[in-house]
Amino acid sequence: MKIAIVGGGPAGLYLGYLLKRGHSRHSVDIFEQNPQGNTWGFGVVFSDRALDFLNLDDPETYQRLIPKMEHWVDLKLDLLGEQIILDGIGFASIGRLQLLEILSERLTSVGVTPEFSTPLKDLSCFHDYDLVVGADGLNSVVRQQPGFHSETRLLSNFFAWYGTKKPFDTLTQSFRNSPWGPFNAHHYRYSKEMSTFIIETNLETWERSGFSKITDQERIKACETIFADVLEGEPLVQNRSTWRQFPVIQCENWFHENMVLIGDALHTAHFSIGSGTRLALEDSLALSKAIRFHGTDLQSALKTFEKERKPVLSKLVDASLQSAKWYENFGEHMNLPPWEFAESYLARAGRIDEERMKTISPKFMAGLLQYRKNISI
Image (cartoon, rainbow, N blue to C red):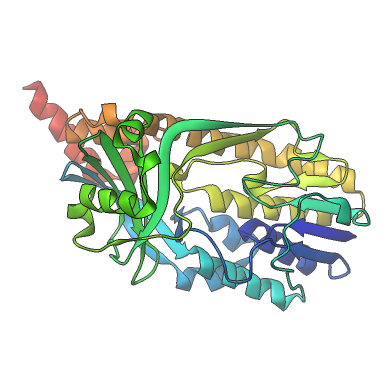
């Protein structure tokens, strides 16, 4: 088959590699609107077991990624300077650019070179392709084609992705008050020298702060003041650090005719559970498997992809939306005592009950049970 992949992010690069590796006779072309080596954001984070699927299905790529990643075994909640450790909730992270470089190397190993600096306004140039894959993210050109029946709604909070040269020891959620209202920072290191620093606030605080009317540098200075004790003198770094509201994307149809969507073009998962990149890679793997199984029977392959992937994806996306709902009201949760705040945080996505937490985080649960005992006396 002749296959066009629109988008050279993790989903598109990895799918190109898998398709060519699985069937060398496929013709695979990848089109990316940005120049090579140009990417937004800083690091991406995965839960400690999130890449197990990769080790099972593609151990070579897994072995190239793991040594390049930062790892830690705890999560830290910092509520107004009071810290609670959630032991046993581990994560791993890697710079987005480094991830793209590794996936590009895998792609080169099977003889595919993406065409960079190729923005597309429509799909008229793809009339002779058997399959067109939309891996082109939030503003997908492919998704805009008739037949997908997509819906996009915005959550109310505003957020921006920054970086900092302060390498944090673990993934931390820091909650602080400002003269205008509450702010939250999700921060974690993704290399020995750099960390991602995502800052979020609610709509009311955004409006009171006047952030929409001031310059990027003025916003940065304000955020550096709010999180001064967290940053310890290190400045925030920009890389397309635009303040925006999180888009929830849902598609009635995953494919239409010879077009199919994967990754953020198809769905979004809120950054508070760190699953967006993982889901994109899983989509690529599931689609490549379906195509390999059905061969040139494209419609059967696309139906299988949707049928087998949709239940798994829906569960994770629903959990991310539950988590996002908690963050939409995080200012109210900040009024709780630290241990109750931590309990509320853990329950936000509805995925972990207390019995499981006793196994995963025995130290935290022992502290929580002691707190309950103390307040009941």
